[in-house]
Image 1 (cartoon, rainbow, N blue to C red):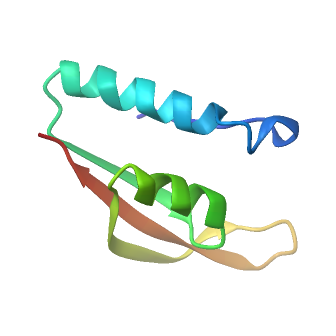
Image 2: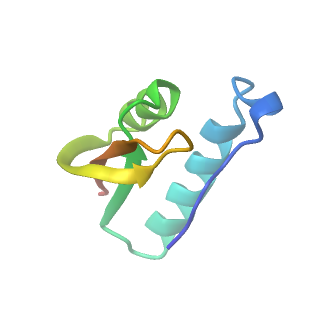
Length: 83
């Protein structure tokens, strides 16, 4: 399991793209053929990043995330088939 996060004050500067690209390259070099991740369905910047790398939604986890306001947020399950 691997988590990637970018500090709030550094978002939008390409750091997430660089991190994800580096890790996907490393995984491909190790022979990984499929990567699956979960992302908050309200996190539009992350969804756009994952789509740009070719990830596609393959499922949804309803009420997966606990929110500070006591509500629950759902996650999209996304997958990337690697060559």
